[in-house]
Image 1 (cartoon, helix red, strand yellow):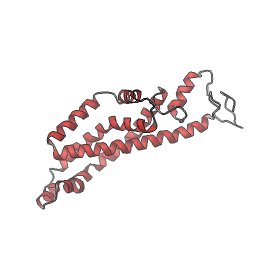
Image 2: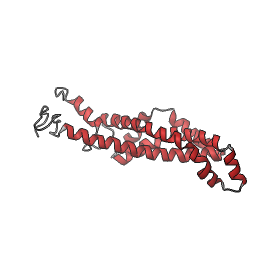
Image 3: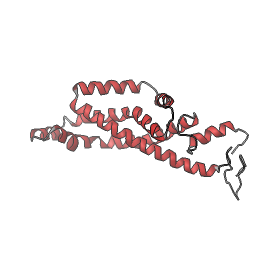
Length: 200
């Protein structure tokens, strides 16, 4: 299609972009990209944060100290800045590298939630009874303590999907996110900024 053609009910309801691509089609495919990446990133960082938080809260000691210091260090920087640094260090950023970069800096919130719940649950009567009956520490953690932290983790994951969409769109808007041909909301906004005369 012609580049930057205005909206038309017969052919392109939202017009075309500077490369002649249908804006509505890219909006729909960008939705799939945003939701897919957000969901995968949330699953990844929730898994990492849950594992580290559970181990840290249950076993304590040197492991707890190390995990807490790493959590504090990563939490002291804005997430977007850390992801930008990681993406800028890569020669050819991909969707996988973006996914891993987001998960590498966002697991701290989940780890703190899980650690707090594990600390409380491991002192409850049911955990003490399981220990007294001879259950191994791994079984006590997996069967009795960790299920107590599932509720807050699900809530954090649900809220995290929206935050991941904002992070991914912001990175694409700054041209440091997904590679160029992949449609995304941030890439569409960046292109609209470059062609202000095309109001659509």
